[in-house]
Structures are given as C-alpha cells and as structure tokens.
Image: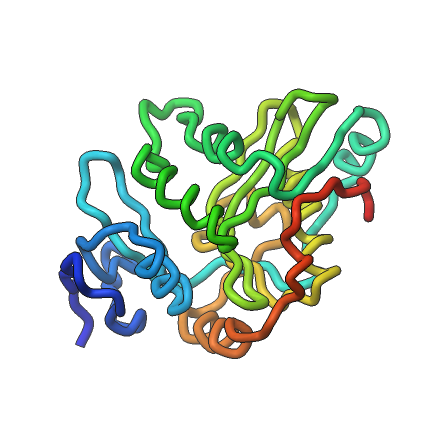
Amino acid sequence: MNGLSFIDDEQIRFPSPELALSEPNGLLAIGGSLHPKRLLAAYYDGIFPWFNAEDPILWWSPDPRAIFLPGALKISRSLKKSLKKRPWRITINHAFADVMAGCAQPRKKQRDTWITQEIQLAYHEMHSQGHAHSVEVWMEDRLVGGLYGLAVGKVFCGESMFHRETDASKLAMMALHQHLLQHDFKLLDAQIMNPHLESLGAREVSRTAFLSLLKRYRDEPVAKSCWLPKEMPIGE
C-alpha cells in the first residue's frame, strides 16, 4: 500500500520507491538530513531530495521518470553552428561550487530557488568525497553555463543546469553525454521531464523500468580517471 514515510536523523535506508504517492507524484518520505550516507542511499535506490527553503526535506521517486539513453542526445543545427562560431571552452570538475551557485540563481519569474544553502553544502561534501561532479562551460575565463549531478556506478543522476549565454547549458549537456559515452555509462537520469529536456532527446519510462535499469548498472565499476578534472575538446 502506498503511503508517506517519515525519516528520522538516524535512519539511512528508505522505503521502497514503489510505495511513493501518486499525488503529489513521487513523494515518498519526509525528514531526515542530507548526510552523505543518506544521500548515497537515496540515489542508489532511485530517490532524490527536492524541497523549498521553508519545507522539511522531501524525498521523491516520480512515475514516470525522464531519462537519456546513450546515443540519444539530439544536437540541433543551431547548436552545431554555435559550436563553430563562439569561443567556447569546456571543463569537468574545475568549478563545482561555482556551477552550483549558478544553478541556484532563481529563474525568470521565480522569487527563490530549491537549491538552498543547505543543499549546496551537502553536495559540496558529496563532491569532495568524489560522488558529485560538474561540467563547466566557459567563454575564455568567464563561466557561462554548466550542470552538476551524482554518479552511481555507470548511472549519472543529473540535478540541475544553468546558462548565462545562449546554448551554454545545451553545450554542457552535450559534453556530459560525450563523456558518459566515452566511459561506457549506461544511463543518464533526468528525473522529471520538461520541454527543454524533451527537446534534447529525453524520454519517459515507468518508475519500474527505471529502477530495473538502475539496479542493473549502479554497481558497475568506473575507471578512477573518469572524474579527474580536465578540459574537454569540443566535439571530443
């Protein structure tokens, strides 16, 4: 029977994602903290935190789930032209904190952000432990876009992206996709579908199908060199 669970500060494991509510879609649990062990346990089971500053910590596993499969990213003609015309530079894990700060800036018509200081501190710690990663897009020495997320085996769980120049977030996604293909990742979790993700080639699958893919690939090892900071040639 589906229902909402309450997590205390000592509890690490979560109830089955299949028990999440249908309304609001995917809400599974309330409470706990953003301790690294709890965050790792959440992503390992296909669960992620998402809450506003005034809310308690809310944990989600929506149905359906937005994902990218290897090779499915759509690169538009306009983006291909932009790659040739503008002086882009792309790096991995060079400016994680700055990328999170960029993602935390409220979007147009928004007064605040779900990427609170609490969220930023928690994911900074995840980054320092080698679990969370960023892709940065630069114009010379100016950060103009990027994204961040967590790696769980050969699954990358995308969290957020931002841009300060047209096409910068799309370029970050393209670079991430190339990097994941290069290192034989099997799945990119995009959490909840929106028009931007759909335009890039994301598809929706049932929660059951997503969890099956996650369980298949979450324990597969990745080379230690995979997430070392580096600069990526565009079109690598």
